[in-house]
Image 1: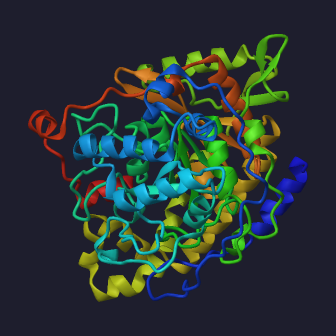
Image 2: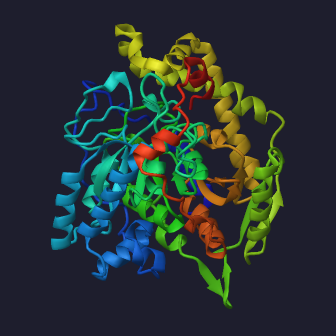
Image 3: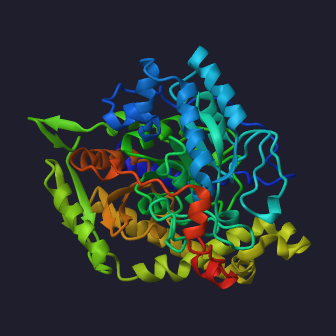
Length: 524
């Protein structure tokens, strides 16, 4: 479909469509349908690296699927290898809220008897704000303590229908407002690259799923993004995270944060894995009206396979990558990998790197007016605030802030959002196909797709970058990421194992406790 038609469809789809909020006892009471993905999921056989043959927890999803299909690896052995790492290292990482070893082993044995789909036998981590039938879903919050859904979120149902095995629920920020902590603010999940220093930023509220994949305790994972929580943890932990266009994936059965900004998507090891996961997740869901009547899902898996012409990696189609004025400013330890990224990208045939400018009111539109999200998060939770504000724990201030925005301020903010959308679609994205970004907020406000991928290191901590594109152009983002990852190896690097839990706890710095003021200042 042409870019112009994509834009028209996006404008129509976002002109008031909302999802059903997933709150216990609320309107969301129907089990999701088990309709499969919008297009067939055909996985390519890929070359399996020696590291992955030796240790299946090193494998990408595509490598693991190849090993399973060729019967070079059993699902039981793949799951057991990940459960072994969870037992040895999650006491340090604290990536999981809950693990499901018995159910995962039973599902693996069933997968070895009969393959049931493209993800058959693949162990997955699910962020703890996705409903999981018969398994507690707490969103790391007092609000949902003890809540056990009767059905799976649409995203979880689709992954399981494709053969995926839920190995556990990933830690998260309370109600998805900040990095993963207990409800009262004590830091839980660490950055997998610096497990001994819990002060190092692991990225955002989807840090449990990110750490589970980076720490080789799950082959892939899903998270949610409202203010950067797919691409930021991916950048911080050397993963490839893909936040799709609003409506491309369903958020039915996901505990809400902001109904105009909540997105579901994968945190994966590389572009191909992200494409496979998104292909399974994407498609219409009658329980989420945002997903209905959209352009067809393109062939994302093909988009994520590198192209070679005359022996050289090339972009699948000519692509202009826009570089904003702030991209090469700031911390020199981050600027250096960004500069090397631009050099590598610019050397790929078909890629054109070009400077672009922001409109004069960019800072106002993406800064001050971003506060309108606060009233959206507060509205569905008003009954809980009225019952007992202490249920919101360390994140209470960010929920109270939403009470103090007036109706006319909210309307003004919506007008500002529409103005920003015009500035992006008719301005910045008219001068490039893909836009590099220094932060996810502008495209989160608008519901446009973003992809985070690793581009180097600043000391021991990974450095990533964020690419944004026009509506429903996830394939364009994957094409760029696949080409870059074909000429670099950052995405193949894994963190060293931490010391076993007792020794690590003795040597590690104490887990900090975030204050309500810190959470309010950094909230998604």
